[in-house]
Every structure is written in structure tokens, then in C-alpha cells.
Image 1 (cartoon, one colour):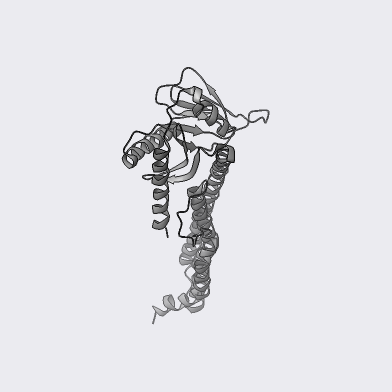
Image 2: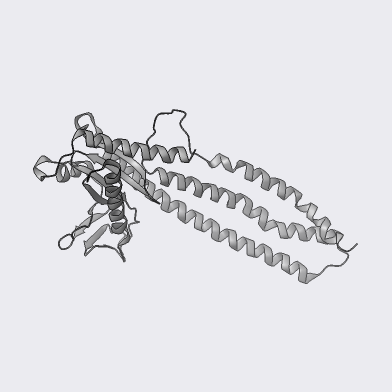
Length: 306
């Protein structure tokens, strides 16, 4: 029966299939997410969503790196089986097996390259998130207990990197990571110009970071008004760690403040929260309602992910 010549070589693929099942069973080893057994409402860490995305990226890298060679060798192993059971050798058929192997090599090489680029970008973003989180943690030292800092607060379809509740209102802080290029002499070019609602990086200009910060600020203001029943002052801050901000012209009305993140806690204290700045003060019951609303939202997402 001629069809057996095509069926029997499938058994040569059994070892590769067994290894693939082992790999799929081991993919959970790359899962680092830990669920606390405590029932008390748990806060999120700085860059929590980036950590989760980084876990997913490492898991995808592991799967493609382990399964790629198995899938690439499958046409060749099947072809070896065809040599054993086939009465005649068709070189055109063998060319097809070789072409399939080459195609799989190209596909997985591109996928691995994409994974490496994604992991590198996520690591840079997480490093910036952690640096801003460390700066903001200075606000909750014993002598400054009037402020509360929340990290990675879930919103509608996105996360607010840092949300600070102060006596002067709330501050929605977005952190953006950008690689700093080198000039012809090898020096780091770390100056970004702020003009007309745009960020002028070396070789490019962007509006998206400022737009995302405005969205986070406006969403926070609308959500707190809905939860607390009163208007709550909300300010937007865009942090660009490692960059020197050079304002050009007057800041447009409604645009968020742009800082490099260094000394952010001191900047918040002196620029936004000092009594001489003329900022309105929130009473303690309102601050308590704001904190409860944020805690409830963080808790709701944590329970949804269990």
C-alpha cells in the first residue's frame, strides 16, 4: 500500500514530539508572578505591568528557543523516514523538505530577534520605572507622612505608572524610557527640547508621551470625581529618566510638567505642595476617600487576575 510510505515516517517524529511536550510542560518555570496568601488589600509594585510583560516575553523566548529547533528539524526527520520506506527517491520532494527547513530557520530567527528587542525595551522601561519609584518613596518617609504613593494603578485599558496623593491634590505620573544615542565623538546625547507640545529628541520628535500623560491626568480627575463626588485637583507629570529637559518658549496651558526624575520628590514638595505655592489643600476625609477608592481599584484588578 503506497500510502504507508507517507504514514510510517510519521513515527520518526515521535521523539521530537515527546521533547516538545516536555518543553510545553516546563514553560511554567518562567512564570515569576506570585500571589500573596494574605487577604488584606495588596498594592502593586513599581513597574508591575512591565514585570508581567517581561515575564511573558521571557516565556515566549523560551518557547521559540526550545521548540524552534524541533520544528525546524521535523521536515528533515520525516524525509529520512521517507528514504527508509520509499521505494524510489524523488529529489524534488527532498528539495521541498530542505526548503521547509530553511523557511522555519528564517521564521524562528526573526521571532527570536523580535523577542530580544522586546526584552531589551521592557528592561529599559522597568529600570526607569524603578528609578522613579525610588524617588517617590522619599515622600513617605516619617517626616513626610502627608503623602501616599501608589504604583502601577490600573485605569481603563492602561496603567498609571505612579499616583501620588498629597495635601495639594493627586499627581498622575507617567514614566517613559528612551535610549540615548551617541554623537560622532562617542558622547551621550541626552538633551530633549520641549516646545509647542512636542518632545524633540535627538533625531526624532514625539507627541505621544505628553498625550498619554494628559489622558492619565484627565482619566484620574474624572474617576476621582465619580468616586468621591467632588472635584479633586489632579496634575500630570511626565518623567524622562536620564534626559535633560530644555524648555523652549512658554508651556502651553493644559500640558503636563516634564521632568527627568532626578530629585522628583523634592520637586513635588517645593514646586507643587509648598504652602507658598497657593495650592488648595485637601481635607483629611477627602484624602481618605481618595485612598480608599485607589485601594479598592487595585484590589479589584488583583482579584480578577487570580
